[in-house]
Length: 188
Image (cartoon, rainbow, N blue to C red):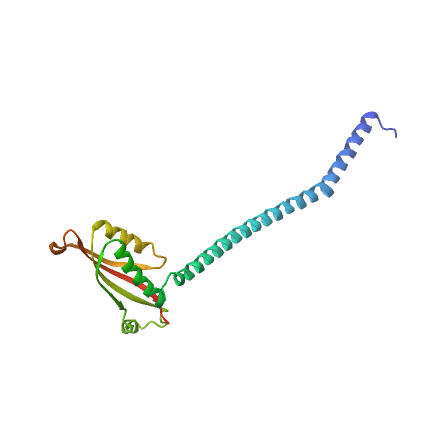
């Protein structure tokens, strides 16, 4: 049986169509499924990578915060006076007042009572003691500003609790200044 050219051509197209169907069913479709599976794995890996990057950034920020807090915790130790430093501080107050032509009337340091700390029942006693200083001066207004600025620039913690400025006719043109300062000392 001889095939006509039309039948040959039809048979050729059927053969090509079967080949294409077989190629699609046995090679292209399985490879497409593998590729889409690999794409999903890539997306999952990218999500995990981004999550990991966020965690490392979080760890870095936490690490930086911890180091900052450690420095802050160590900071007060360097800015607290010892007993010798406290004596030098009192001499500094006297020197500054004489330099600024202020008359120091009284300087009364008073250590905070240990009984008040016991009343608080603090389980861990503080390594610091507070010393309150009551200072009375006769000063001009500009000298007082320079004196307070000098106290502010000291390299340790000094708290100004109260400041009272009065005009007294007996000492005019000077002012009567009452300062209340608090200094923290390392207790030994």
